[in-house]
Length: 412
Image 1 (cartoon, helix red, strand yellow):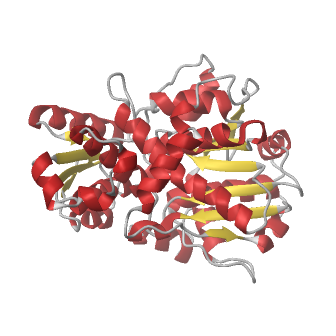
Image 2 (cartoon, rainbow, N blue to C red):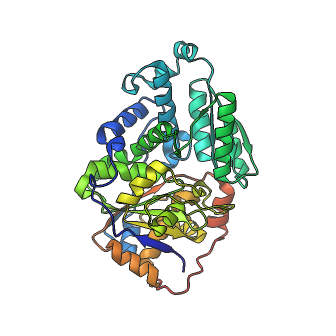
Image 3 (cartoon, one colour):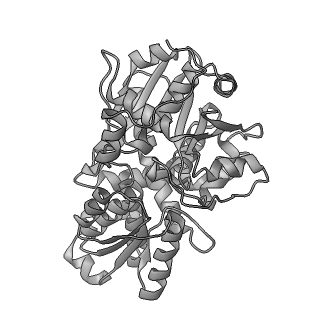
């Protein structure tokens, strides 16, 4: 089967499960206002795809295009910049609401803080975001990347003045290396996953990610659209998915859309945790070798897991070809729809939606029916990255690699 899934029959209503205070409208407004203080800030486009929606048989389809974020081609900077801002505000004894990014860039503040080195593990986008955020305030960054990382992403990180290396470790072991080096050298780890004793910075990262969801709801309203009935969110460790889902639950309450969590089948720790069903997060191990490099994570963020466990509608494990399908669908739109250039991790939700609405395979039909996807559905997707790996993009979109092998489907 092309996909496997768990439908959450124990999904809770907002407020009846894990607390939502950390992603309340008040907390996410702090992050949004901080981001507004960046010279580079502008809301990323919310792209309507009415022709594709009609083809798929749904009411409306919107894609939040994060390739335009701060000139960095991915959404990750929202989390890294806010977490670093909150960390520095705490060091200064200040409230983030009263501390602008321009002030953090000042020589006065730099002298007061002294030299700081930030470190993280990344497949590329998060590390680039940390390197950029550190560079903006005149500080250093040391970045560790898992084996198999694209050299283009390595050079993008180094271009922001960071020290960066591709290790011979998988992602989760690279995180442990970053943590070890931070302890040994007195560095500050900016990681978008949580573990016991390390929760403040991951919380701030999740709050930073919510800025894109704040923008998306505003933009849908501005475009005269109804609030989404369905949202599909990618998950690696789950920080992005938890940040957006938590904001939607806290803000929309009983009108919260059905949220589906999407992962690569070779790095599906959220899906595995949901399938085991004991309420605890579970890990997957091995090389985590997937086209979706940004989602190649085997250990859930313990903070976001609780949100995803309680409030998500479904958890889907996807083969790599669905990411490639999504890249091709967005890059070669139906006449009248705009082009969206999406990387492999950014496009998997489009590939999954395409499969669910076209396929007559049992699992696709079952999930489509359980989610209630039909001609009245208003679907929101997030293209979390642009063409951050030109090699992977060309292989999928130009040369047609990662073909759909499913035979049992009706083509329209």
